[in-house]
Length: 194
Image (cartoon, rainbow, N blue to C red; front, side, top):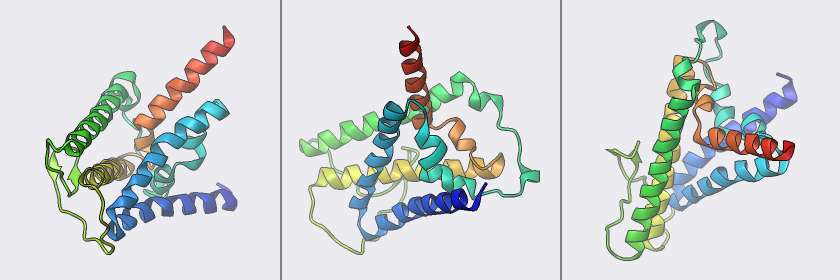
């Protein structure tokens, strides 16, 4: 990897760390996750390839800096890369988004109390983050911010574990955004050839 490319990867990796640090300043910075969830699709639509995954994903850059000892790298199991496991992960995150959206709507309607704390992998309640800046915002927005932060933290922790168990960017083989953008690019290629 040339030094210019390595410098870009280091800068992008810092964006991931900054995202999680900003959550301690104000949880509302967690709403930036929406950019990370939409930008890959906009770039794939425009470039007709998975440019986000290959060049700009901050988490992929963070994972690239882990487990540098290539001797300890192991092959990512075929069960990860085959269609079934990727589909399970996609369904899991789809359900996560569905629960997040549904609960946020219910809170906005006054039918449910917000969950102003981190919840790892949907199931494991954690702690609220200490906030350096206290902003007044609707309860549904606080809830949504914590849910987005929780989802980003859960997937990043899983990616870190996979980086150390196998190879640095193992998470990328099952990432829901990568799966969806890959399918989107393939469909566009099929349509353009017909």
